[in-house]
Image (cartoon, rainbow, N blue to C red; front, side):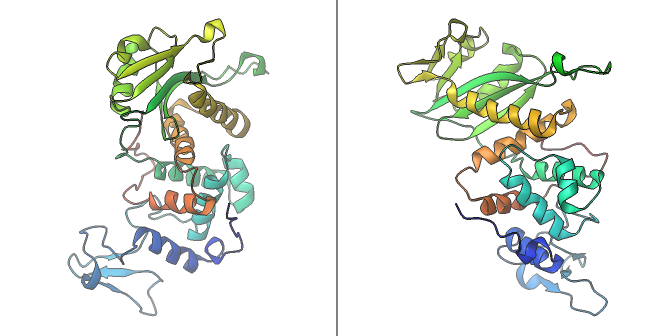
Length: 308
């Protein structure tokens, strides 16, 4: 695997970081984020009083930079720190806490928290298609993330456990969702929307799955309550269980506690790393930054691309 050179100017110099972002978000040249024109209909401003990277649209007559219309718009955080934060998130297999990012970037906790949550929005792809397909197996299972009673101390309340359901295509991608309750009413819409019905559905023995399994090309189960985990080298849910193992180690070891309001963002982060596991860390970071387009968030504005 190609190692990332953290001495690269894009992690320390704002001009280099801006040019790097321009190459990712404008691969064919500057594009006006307001009216969409590009090429000869835009011009770069080079005046002495103009900050670097400003362009002007000849149609709408508005100035713009590469950060307009992205999660980085109007941010006071230097662009080089945005790029470095994306690299750290992309290369941290079990995630990285905002406290750790605070120490590494030399910022305060609020800034680090701000950076990571907006980068998690970059990981969300609202146009992603379903997993699976003909002759493919999709494993489905649910788990719970949250605090444990034995870890409660000093009279503090135990953090509520939250249900998560994941659909994993073997040798393919994963889709994870936070659900309020684990039952057929909440799980069926998620499964039929996010798994191709030509797929072979693989689950445990839960009573939630047999009915929805009838809508797929086939449905197999393993009986975990009877300590059956693999049968015939085909019937198993070990792929999705392995994903849950990494997710839980990240939440318990790196984040310790995840609020229900932001859980979908953490799931998007772990899904993103799984789905780009064949890329190098540098390529994964570039993919994350490329997802910043069209996702500007205001402080009091909820995500419009939530996947749960």
